[in-house]
Image 1 (tube, chains in turn yellow, cyan):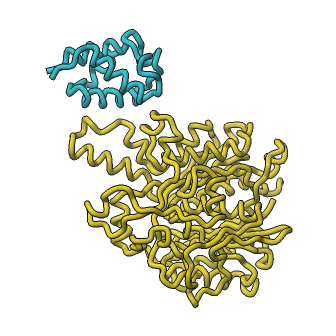
Image 2 (spheres, one colour; image 1 turned 135 degrees about the horizontal axis):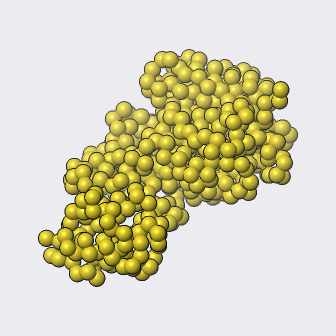
Image 3 (cartoon, helix red, strand yellow; image 1 turned 45 degrees about the horizontal axis):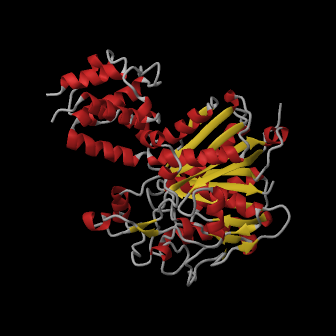
Length: 414
Length: 82
């Protein structure tokens, strides 16, 4: 009987509201920049939508991808492919048997631009004008399939959907693929492209979006007393995961290690987090136990913290409950203050931020916190990035989704 | 308004170029969609859908299999114009 493989991260890729790749995104995050801006369209006026801003990609895909690829991929798949190519190159394009290579790429919403464009075409022009690629473009597994096809991966291609926890759940599933012996290398992450008037109108209808139209860059303010909802973002984060043995055999550079995956569901409400945080607590405890990491070793938490009135505090109390007195020395970062909320891409991008925070010993800042909520029971990294100590470090990345999905990942330095 | 054969070839070359990434001037009459331009059945149906809209014609599914070369498609579209 062989032991369960250790899973390491050997490649990182992203395209985000802060930058077209990981380096520019991380530099902007460390500097505390906001990716949110007023939308250059008239959706708010035309459809009377109460929100006129979002955190759109810094580098449009048309500047990166050839025209035929743009035409046959929904934007959600375009973002995933851009990030996957960067991650794969960053990993050194590993030489791996196709049967030992997997792809797990999630989206929370799916190909909504394609879906709604095709519906418009059908209504305005009839069935003969609906393009044959419509279904492969709108299906939510399309980003996973494009990554699988590009790499020729044969160990399995999957797209787990759990709203705003999707990207983290994809990474968790990929870890499991390697641990269970199904694969040696898995390209995993999340993507979202839902900055379209319909989802903005729908999120606004549920009163979950910030309406701070006069100050887009200041609108995402997790843990600030005046927070009023999340800022819709878009983009993708993709990592290359690899068994430690496989990575060592080829001399790969290891960015970090995913030591624990914790999953739970609230069993409580479709959109509201369970008030006691029992599901979040269960996920974090399961991840720490699997990682065999003590609370005292956790130095950083990348919070899910979307800037909603209720959600931010429940998470902070859950972290306090799990770590106890050791929570006092945890640097808490809420990076959605800068990126906006990438929905299905969030958990993956924030996994990348967490890996880089440990690797570079730098917890990224939480911006826009002018007056911290007095009920916040943790040490928030406000305004400027904070240096983390030397030595072996562990961190938690939390992701929670509509439906009551909770995913906690425990990462460690290599 | 009817399109000339040159207009149809140029318009079709533009559609094929967008779909495949090949330069439009390489999409010439004698080229075979499958053998020369490496166009699969789904891409062919995309080209047909876009060509129908561009030239305001109907290309029935039964006819598509007879369109071996770019020139075949140009001739069919030219003949189908009302």
